[in-house]
Structure formats: structure tokens, C-alpha cells
Length: 153
Image (cartoon, rainbow, N blue to C red):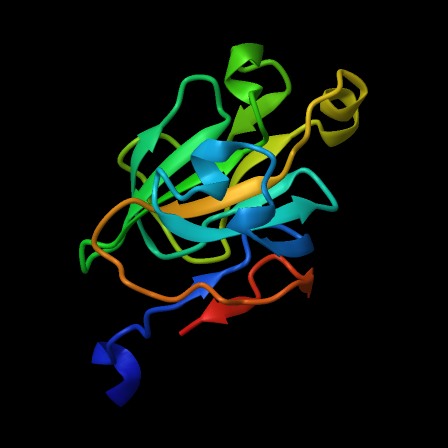
């Protein structure tokens, strides 16, 4: 009962199972040069993407390749699945939430057909960037991570 009003601890989790890499290693200057903000990337092992933080889905792109989430503390992040995947116009992407949905860190938000998209030649590196409102040094190294694994707390 006393835990009922306990403040939820802020954390950022891995959005997908895979290989964590620094943004500097992403093969797209918009991300590697941190034009959209600092963050990290994961080369996915599967096609299930989870929310990297708890908050509200401020934007769910109609193409399904990106989701913007804002925490209750005003921290904004963008989850962007793949490089140049916007040109697919939603093919292979299946958003699991709608704009305005409340999400918890680690909750599935998008599924994508990894094999089909890779066969078409798309790199599916999934970036998590923070365009404003969050200052953190994302020196997380390179390693294998599990979806929902805490990276920053």
C-alpha cells in the first residue's frame, strides 16, 4: 500500500534486442553527426521495437518507421527504425500504438518485418535520439543488449 504513491524512477532502456553502437557509427550523417540530437543506436536482432522510456506517444509516423515519445518530465525522444526507411511508405512496419497513447519503458510500440526489409537492402539500425530537454553523455560502449534492458537510470 505504501508503494502506491512511489515515484516511478526515470530510465532509458534498449528498444530492441541487438548490438548497441554509438551514434557516430550510424551510416547516416543526420544521426552520426547528432543533427537530430544525441543518443544511441542498436542493430536489431529481431523486429520488435519497444519504448525506450515511459511517457506519451506524441508522434506516431503514418509510415510506422518512427515514433516520438515525451516523458512526464518533458524529456523527448525519437525512435527511428532503419536508414532511409521512410521511403517504404509503411511497407513492412506495423505500429502497435496510436498518437496520444501512454507507454511504459520496454512496452512494444512497433513491429517490423526484419527479413523482408533486409532482403530489399535496408539497414535496420534503430536510433534513439533526444532532440531537446535531456542532457546526458551517451557513452554506452558497444555490446549486445536485450530489449527493455536499462541503459541509463
